[in-house]
Length: 580
Image (cartoon, rainbow, N blue to C red; front, top):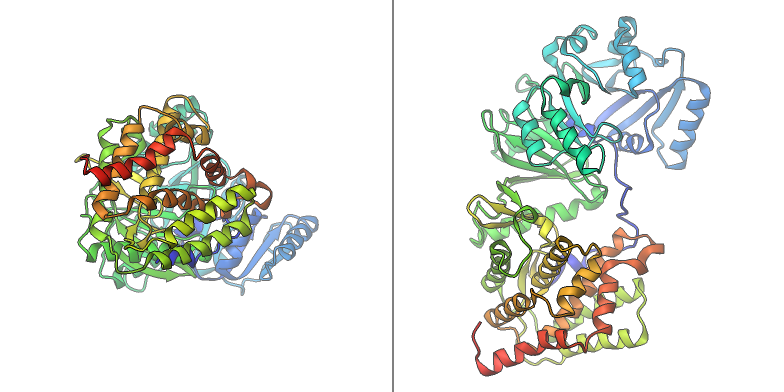
């Protein structure tokens, strides 16, 4: 039981917001295993770190000796042993015998300089292997510039629409594919340049406008003559490594169009390729790639979870992504899945007790647990033993008062002393409202199964979804603080109280969960969430974590009438045979 959870290290600060890998454009390359890259200009540390991982050798040509020394010192400080620096007047003090897989032109100033100087471009050509590529970004590009300025056939060049306007690229779509750009704009899959609603609307308008968009866009360019041993690559095809992986799994994506989304400020967020059939305006497949091999196990777990659900006949293609392939390239896990066509749950839900989509989500989670409940896998004593392991790790991470510590230990002991059966269930692991989609048929689909537990804890998914739903409802009513939003609906009488009671009652009755186990499962759920959140908190911010403070709040207010009612309702429900 809890195989995924118990095998996970919850070390604080290992997945901090903002400390995300750079060079997202590198996922567009034909291969993620390179021999040599030459950088014209000094790239940011995040880009340099990624290039160091991808290459046997990285050469950075700097504008002067001072910059070269700075880049060298940065490489040494961050253990980038394969990064070497040089400086020259033309940034090209590299022997032509040092053929490169990739030349990266860093900065818009260098881009303008080299694009206007054919002699310098000719020097770059001599650096490249026959299948080598040049990558650069600019705010103004034209197809004839890209072709004529580099002695390449324009057909071998690929122009890209990028967002945001500055900083790390997080969205890339082939510039000529207006249909996909429109899809990304409508579904808000791009990254706005400013987190201001009115400016976001202006940016969407400009990007969707054929004329004005030329003056307000950020462009990328991949220039070269990549040679595919099996067929010549067309500019709109997915990268070679993806096509090869898909082909090995008997999935044909050779004629699919593509778009890349590498959003998010956590290193655990995956890079996504959306793959569209030739004439389709909606994606058919999605490919997920880890940014760091440290997160490979999570993505592999998603593939195995989806495969197991399919084998069990649970969830159809309309509500559950169907696994296509699992592979590894460049040390990174790669998973292909079918796309669920729909609208994000938060755009459809009203956050009220009678919201149809909220009820469908609750029913789906409940039905999943009913279909997978197994009381033969573990005794209550075994469950308590595993929870105690989490409790010990929790106390090594967070601080509780003596009273809070004793209370939580007593909750685990209630489970240990239970003499009856204890049903384990298939657990999604992260059913927050942000991971749900509403389909065109009114169904609710659950995405992102990385934290799935085939033998998980009952009620944890439901508690977590209800917390997410209640805090979202509170936010729509003006309560921005998530902890206050939770307290507003869980620890006080509210319009959602009947929904909470009914949902938890039906779930417990249907899987045969003894009433006295509801309360300990409630508290251990938040203990588990706090442990998971620790990786996203620096040691200095641990005590400010949302879930550890939610747990403290619930323990301190455990005698409130609302919580008492939430737990006591099961005793009457089971005892008097009352209906839902």
